Amino acid sequence: MKKFLYNYLFISVIATGIFLLAFTGCTDKGAPSLFQGVPTGPIGATPSITSISPSVALAGVTQITITGQNFSTDPTQDLVYFNGIPVTVSSATSTQLVLTSPNVIGDSVGIRVAVLNAEMFSNTVSITQKASSKDFYPGAKDQSDVPMSIVSDNLGNIYSSNNALGVYQITPDSTISLYSPKGGETFWSSMRFGPGGVMYCARGLQAIFTIPAGGGVKNSTWLVLPSTIKISQLEFDPLGNLWAAGKNSVIYRIKQDKSFVTFPFAANVTAMRVFVSGGTTYLYVAAQTDSLTTIQRMPIDANGNLGTAETYFDFSKNYGANWVVNGLDFSADGEMFLATNMSQPLIYVNTDKSTGALYPGVIQNSPALGLIWGSGNYLYYIRRQINDATGAFLVPQTIVRLDILKPGAPYYGQ
View 1: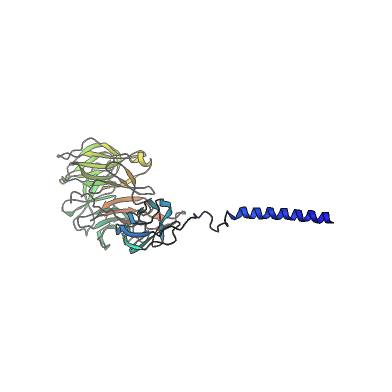
View 2: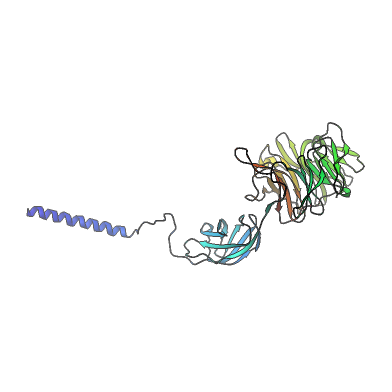
């Protein structure tokens, strides 16, 4: 019995020692956290904001600089909120954060900063965030009133050729009125204002039509070209010449006396614009050959003759085949803008040929059917109707106004 008791006490002492040793070894590891993956460490200094530049920004577009103190130099550890909406920081120092403004609109958008391991948020500083994009056409509420092409005048009015309805005028404050009732054609593929305020129109046919200054009446036929010709694009140059093109083997130069000459150009012209660069006047065209699209330009000399075409921008090389350019325009400083049928519909091309999507995350993913500069810094484009995954109608085809923060190049002929 004694021997059994001795063995029992000996085993108990050994087991207790092992338990205490194991317990002592575990205490250095600390209790497991309820928030796995959250960085731990000493509490950091509270961040603070001293200024934000600019104080007025375009939502979803403008680069914002936040200046202050106690930021992390690791941008993933800086948490910035616009009215409670988190925003990704692109670069960071201990005193400055840089990011792109989110698509949050308001006269007083509150911004504050949190830093991982800092216990408190920063103070709140407010800025104004203006809308960079606005659905502009008040008539677009269903599928019956559909804008198909647009043009602007020197007063900042926008004109929309609507499917089966006629041409409408839209003033800068969005007041809409019928400018010219529907004639024999359902809508125009291209419109341009010419001398005396006359509107020139094309529809992919052999004829060019006009609407008199001030509108009010139906269009009339201005010029009939050979029966094999298809004119879908029109543009005026500084000499008053009207340039006309489409799915042909030539480009037409037409004078006000209706005389015309042709210049060889074997491609389907889907967009056209005259722009003066470096003192030379060029005719730029979106040229489609089979499934490939390039932007070609040809100099226009003092006599109104076209020079040799050169490739200004290879659209298909940058964005792939089978896409179409439906509109082409320039800002005053020479940046080119293209309206396309891609899901990211508007493309910019800088003078150094660098390119990218315009306002990604702001512009809805639906093809653009055309574009035109209005007054001031506004660029307008037609956004195609948006359907859901089943093809059901969601959003009507409409005109969208974009604030580009700079003016467009001048239009000629007006």
